[in-house]
Length: 327
Ligand SMILES: NCc1[nH]cc(CCC(=O)O)c1CC(=O)O
Image 1 (spheres, rainbow, N blue to C red):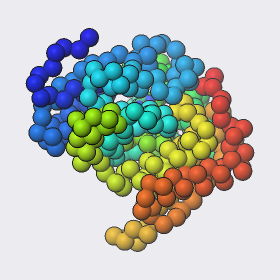
Image 2: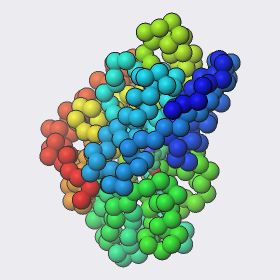
Image 3: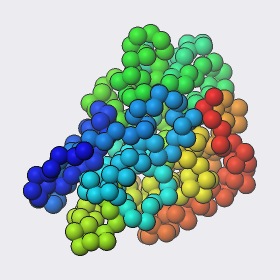
Image 4: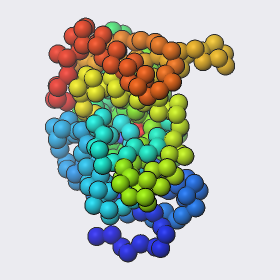
């Protein structure tokens, strides 16, 4: 049940987690600025928040998103903020991805005991992550560098995960830099994992602002107002990354990493590079490829880059490495 809302206020549907509240609060301020209207937060519980199952088992795709989308479609809220990496690649017709604001640091990070960096982890170190993508790449890195680590499937919110390190159950956990930044805990990072070691999830570090697609004049006006918060560079990059994911027919719990970035000579941007990886969680097999093309001028061109890389990855056996569960 939502409270009767303040006259003129926009209702922002949000999950209750600290991360969701932090990112919704930041977007609420920005939306207030561009629309001149107050924004009120409406808390919504999603299946991903209440289920104790491992994400990979409950299917991953969309578990954090569905309840927010339902509230949007029912008209209980006016817009929602998602972590883009949690958003399924198929966009429902009745909803619009009105804005993708400028992306934060897309990297994964390590929070380890005693300030340890990944390469300093001792023999047999227990590294917590519920993500098959992170497991695959960290285990592959460890194998090829003569390290022995044990990846331990965990889940829970950011506080819970860091708690496993603080209480000594695990030597380290892997998280997204962006999430830690947003909740003010970036100081606890002991190692920023470079993209050539661990490619982040497609869209990691970016937010998505979603609203109804605009069947009424009011909805259309909101799409237009929210689109002022869109960052075209971020949107181009995440469009390529998500196109790769979609073309691999993988969901957000699949072991797929992707990152698009711009390559240049000093200030002159020359090309967009898209890197992608898929692998088995034990790290014994990885398909990791990169492609470059002209900086896309349209989202169709960005999508074409993603599809092109997906085709190359599929030709190298990527399909056989997906659909695998966390354990
Ligand atoms: N799957 C949960 C989730 N969704 C978005 C983020 C972090 C913020 C982001 O990537 O934008 C996280 C936590 C994490 O992976 O550490």
